[in-house]
Every structure is written in C-alpha cells, then in structure tokens.
Length: 171
Image (cartoon, rainbow, N blue to C red; front, side):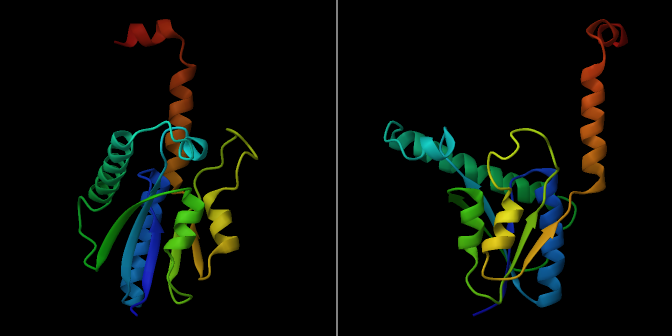
C-alpha cells in the first residue's frame, strides 16, 4: 500500500497553508496526497441526526461540499499544480472524526491547520488539530497559521471600528 499524506481542507486561509505544507511533505515522501473536506447537514451534529431533512437537501449539501472542495483546491493551485498524485474527498461528519478516519495506516501522515486562536465559543468543542494529535493512529503535522492571517484579522477588526460617518465620507 502506497504511503499517503492526508490533509484537512476547508477553504480557510489556515487550511490552504496546511494544504501547501502537505504537498511539500507528499513530494518529499513520494506519497499520494489525499485532501479531505468534512461537511455536515444544516444544524451540525444535531441536524444530521434528525429525519426532518429530505433526500433533496442531503444531495444539495453533498454537492455544495464537493464544489467547496474543488474551489479550495483550485484556489490553492491556481498558480502551480502540485505535480503529485492527488485525490479529494468530501465526507459527511464531524471534521475531527472524519480526518482521523481518513488515515489508513500508521505509515500515513495527517496534516491539519491549527487555525487562529479566537475567543468565539471557548470550550465548546475540542479544536480539530488537538483532537487529531490525540487520536490519529499516525504522525500528525499541525501547521500553524500563516503570519498574514493575523494581519488580515487585525485589518478586519480595524475596519469595523471606523464610525459609519467616516466610511460614508471616504466613498
């Protein structure tokens, strides 16, 4: 069985940073790259257990997840294709479990973005990277956020602090 590098992809800046690191790791190891996007039905974990959503909604959500994965890969490789064997999967489920389950053997490598540290909903659930580090049956490479991610977040916060009148005068 060929060694694989499994990487979590969500389209966020952090996941794209992890994707590029995973490409480097796959090249170095001569491994196949497996990009995985986890998705859930509306309502998250609870919504996916209720029978209130029809088959059409399920198909639409699955198609949207596949399109999101393709868009993330197109964005990541718009300038240069990876030049290695690449497969992509949109899998329904909690991102933490989906990524750990995507690993086939102890010889694989799991690459995850650590994301930015925010204060939204602290303690609500274990971050994906921490869960994967604790539960994956293979080595895990947790990629820190790109330095530009912090600058972008700072610029967004600054933009919201401008008074409405000042924004209108600029236009």
